[in-house]
Image 1 (cartoon, one colour):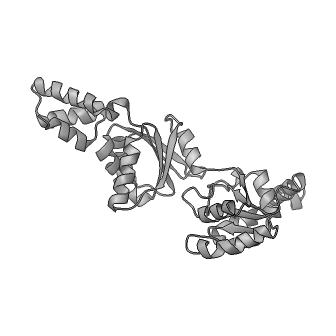
Image 2: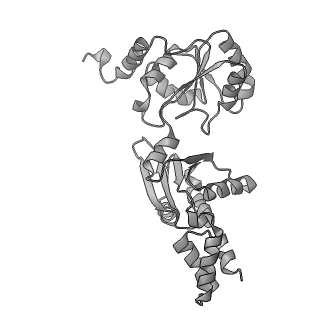
Image 3: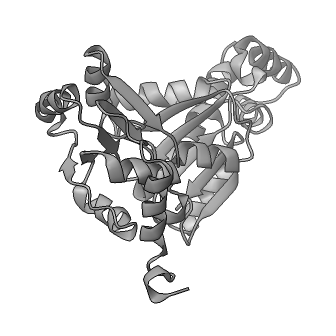
Length: 299
């Protein structure tokens, strides 16, 4: 293979070939919501490359973050920053360009746009204006973590990033721990252990969880176990990188308070002390600490 098409030049060759194979990949007057790699650049699709080559402008969460991907594949299309601070002001101008027949693309820093990323306002405005929105599927940290978790993958709930504090965070944690199916959360490395501990305080220490870190990157890791086990591991091994938490759904026993109350009553009748009942409800039946305490002291 010649130098022009050697290993270093192969990505740009692929991009040109993609556009040649699909010369009309970008639809005039349409907003293309394009998924991009979450780490490994090889995960970009040929269709995504063709669309990014052909649109009039690429709306990026951060143009600087998008540059390595675009440069790697030799894509010279103009870029425009579109983030939470300017989305409201930029959206009307983009709608005008769509109405004029231009094809536009929307990408996030990584993965599928709108999933805990900017862009929802633009997409909603385009739909409300009767303009076409075209999804260009690809990488997703949510789905990558879910399928690698070893937990039941569907149905599932995606909550994204938790609030840092306050009632909103409490409500999110309550929703996550009471869900009968898997819940996917995003978290920062420095808050991971505390979040796992907070979840365990509501869901019980034995609830299954998977923490996926640095997905598709060199130091990719998926740590599986109970909330107690995984929290303890990361207390001793501080995590780095981007993190996705997949929490197993609540069991029928956890969701049926009457059943746990009957268990607590039976243990009390056998002579167990309240503190022992609390421990057994948590360790053997997956009850949260707060619920176990209340049931153990309910006479």
